[in-house]
Length: 283
Image 1 (cartoon, rainbow, N blue to C red):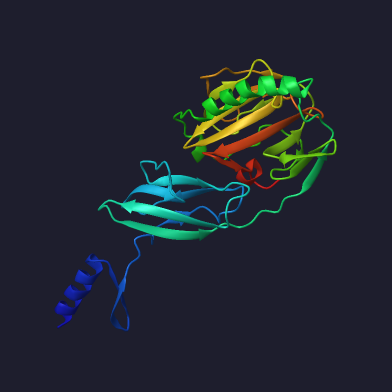
Image 2: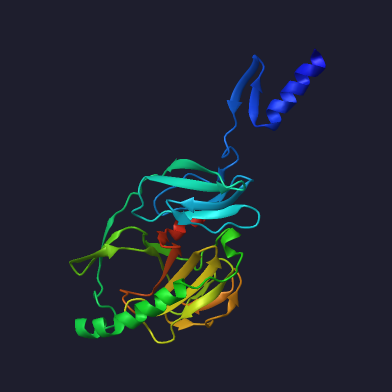
């Protein structure tokens, strides 16, 4: 009888049922039992996750995600992301399973900024004339996909200094309400060198200053994750360059729409804007 009982237990385990010490209570094992996240999802946050071993595709709220060869993927949540999200896994046999996850709400502040709404443009007409081409270059850069392992690294600060502007805060420019602040501002003296926070490929380097961003530098870290550095006084790399974490890539300035010298560091994962501060160790 002992051998038969052990054979039955082995058979149940093989077809995905669990047993208990009390007997043979048949409980189907969840296909997402080995789904793992690096931390709780939060608005403005980025989560590294691991798919179930037999997953071949992953979707977040119907958006197809990139899945690495070892089953790791990223999920980013915009500043205004819904507080509930749905992750769907397509399994090797063609079936699918889903996991609902909660997204914690952010806490945003109002910031008054002494800067011109049109930035480096002298008038609204000049701003409108220039802005379309600038946005086209930014959107074209973000549409690129470059191979990099930067997204797997622990990010470092691009420059030392006081955090002078917070992600998610609504900006009021000389009394005129604007959109929310899309990055993290770090105050530093003009000409201070800043470095790549992680490995990546340069996808945009604006030698001619943009109206709002000034001299803009964008780096693709892979897996849909990219960094943007605004208001630089000088760019030290060019489009197509491969950069390494800690490499000097530019100098702090006050070009574009800026009230003083600082580095604006913005991040996006696919279409979601991410708070860079959440990727850094506490400081």
